[in-house]
Each structure stands twice: as C-alpha cells, then as structure tokens.
Image (tube, rainbow, N blue to C red; front, side, top):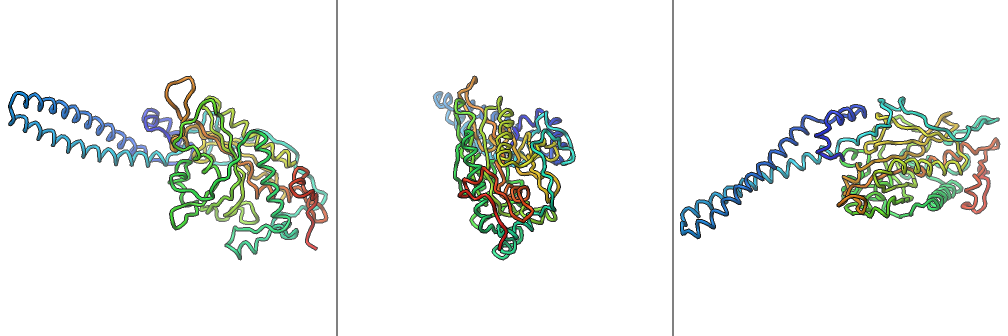
Length: 426
C-alpha cells in the first residue's frame, strides 16, 4: 500500500506509474477524499480549541458566581461536542474510503524496471545451460507422464474437475523428492523452514495484497477463510503488526505448501498438462530486509532459485519484467524460466520480487534499532524456490530417453532411495 501523503505529494509520478503498469485508479476521487479529510481534521481541531476555551470560561464564571452565563457556556460545549462527534464520524468514514482506495493502487515500479505494456517488453538478463538436442522426437509431459504412470489427468478430473491432476507411483515419489531437495538446499543457504496453514483469513490476504483486488482468483470457504495461492501469504504475515530488530535482518524464510488458484481469466492458456492447474505444490522463499539492502537481497534470492535449477541440470534464463507485466505488489520482479522441450521455449518456474514497503505498510511490519529514532517499515521480498509441479515437468521432459524412460537427476537420487531411472509401465 502506498502512503496517502506520498500519493498526494507525488501525484504526477504516481499517475504515470499506474499508467505504465496498464492500470487505472480514480485519482480525482482520491484527491477529493484527501482534501475532505484534511478539512475535517482542521474542523475538529478548531472546535476542540473552542471547546477548551469555553470550558475554561465555565470555571471562571462559576467562580465569579455568574451561573446563568456558566450554563450558557455549558450548552455551547454540548453543541460543540455534538459537532465534533459528527465530524469525527465523517472523518472515520473518509479514512475508510481512502484506505480502501489505497489498497487497490499498485506499487511504484523501481527506476530500474523497463517500461512496457506487456511481456513483449521484458528484458532478458542471463541464461544458464544449453537446451538439450535430442536424437529422437521428445514427448511432451502430458503424454510422457501417463505412459510412465506418474501423471494421471483423467483421475484428477474424476476426483475433482479439470485442471486437477493425480501423481502416481514414481510421480508422487519424484514430487516429494523435489520438495525435500528444495527445502534442504534453501536451508543450507540460510533459510529457516516453516510449516504453515493452507488456509488464511481475509486480514492475512489483505496484508500481502491478494485482497481486495484479486478475490476472484481465490478459492473461498463457507466460513470466510481462503485457500492460499502461495506460502508468501503466510510467511510474510508471520510478522504482521510486529516490530523486528534491525540486528536480525535480513530474515530468510522458506516453506512448502499446496497452493490453490481459480485461474480466473486464464481460459485457453496452457490448458494441456500441468503448467496451469488449480492446485499445485510450491516451495516459497520470503525475506524481511532493511530498505537500503533489499535490492541486493533480491539479487541473492534470484541466485537461490537459480541454484536449484543448476543443481538439477535444467537450462533456464532470467528476465526482468517490465512495468506492464509485473505483479500488483512488486517494485521489481525477475522471472526464472526453465527450458521445456514440449514448448520449444522457456516457461516461468519462479518469480522473485522486491515489494519494498508495500506489503509491510499494509501488514504493519516495522523494524527498529537502526541509525534512526523510532521504527520504520521493512522491505519484504518473495520468490518461488521453486514451483514443484513445473519442476517435475521440466525433469521429465529434459531427462527423457529414447526408450521412454526418464533419468533421475543425480541430486534427487538420495531422496528416491537411490533410484536412478523411471521406466515406462510394463
């Protein structure tokens, strides 16, 4: 969430940022509300001063024995109190309206973010590895998985509906191996592992920016809880309404959770296979950083995600998202895209973002103990480390063999009891 004063004092810059992000926001309405808010504050302060003056006069009049004049002043005080109460009620509603508006405006892009309308303006930063050249026709995971008995799309539909999948036999084992490998690897790089609920309340989702703007993308339960779209929601809100110590920063957290997304508005996109589904597993990274080091922490987070892909031997590239392709709360985002032979292209497997103080302001997360008085908002960062289902897909497609088998990457074999090959069904 942006600060109201910041928006008011930088209205042209904020307007340009929203335009560059392909967004809309009612700036005129905000300015009207902001002006009304300041007017009401002035009215309340003026009336409070008049009330205080009248109250002093009452005492003097009573002391002088002028009871009639004292009673007249008391009536004036009662009228002023009623006016103050009305103004404060009005002010409270204006504050609610202003906050609701601020909850719906996106974060300011960092100056280093390229300006552009959509993914066509994203900028490639680097590549790692070389896509494999097959001496046979590679099979897409939506055919390869069923042939191996590791992915069952039909049973996913039978048990739930389309865009749900079942992993069987070596597929379930490979999925679990990937989760444990990712958690162990991030733990070795300084991330503290958490286990968090797969459901969250509205306040939690508001803190990280999913609510109120993106409610249509969430699965909601009858009692008002939501299935989480990412562990970022829970990890970030662990410190909601808390003040951290500067000496503790940066805090580095990770967690595995199932994730749930309605995928509203994604009809026709990646409908085959496991790339875009309603339920998927993900290992998430979150950081709490001091503002002056948060962009360095973002670079390190990208390296942590890339390290997983490199250990798995999966070719990938890193791109900087342009203003029109970034997520709502991000000030800067890098996407890591893994090579998938079925697409003959790179596909997103991790998104790492610095949200600066956007989420911290919404969730009330501050720190103290730096070279300043009081407390200030931290910067929060998040990144996939990685999307497990997409990683499983990448392993199957990139490690497939001509006989229909799939070689298990060496780093995963200890997690699969030494198994080195996944073979087709007999």
